[in-house]
Image (cartoon, rainbow, N blue to C red; front, side):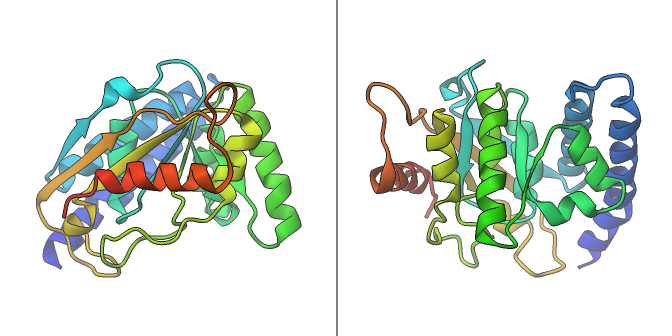
Length: 233
């Protein structure tokens, strides 16, 4: 608990500083590149403060330019820091709309090009997916946790279909990733922080459009199998 409190003592001001820098920087860089660099700096410092080592495998499987949807398991709070460092290209988070209302932090997310999803009812969620699909078709890559929440024990939870519908509407490949070690560094719903290693493993892209495309329930199962194959037991 002491380690966690010391971490938060430095990490909260770091978050405010980087959020403020992203908002101010966006005045001169409306494309979001500076805000993305702020997020990379934030994640690098956060992992360093927690004395957490990051290992990345399969970076060469990530397409360097075409838009994709990164999809993987969700072990804990440190997944965000790990992925911000591990993904070797610019990307956007697909996040619930409520986060964009957080003062300063929400503004920084918007300036970085992150995409809000309104989950308050079915119609609004579909409109959000349509808007996100247009952004992706326009060249944005996004990150989605198909479980929708953090796992309590490391095993994969049932997948929600929203991310897969988005991939099919946008017609872009899905790049599966698997995170290991995050829940050991920071256990779910506990004010604890342990020194450790987080690994991120990328699997080859799975097409959702064109020749060889996978769709429907077969797509869900193939992505799930790719993520599960990387889990350490």
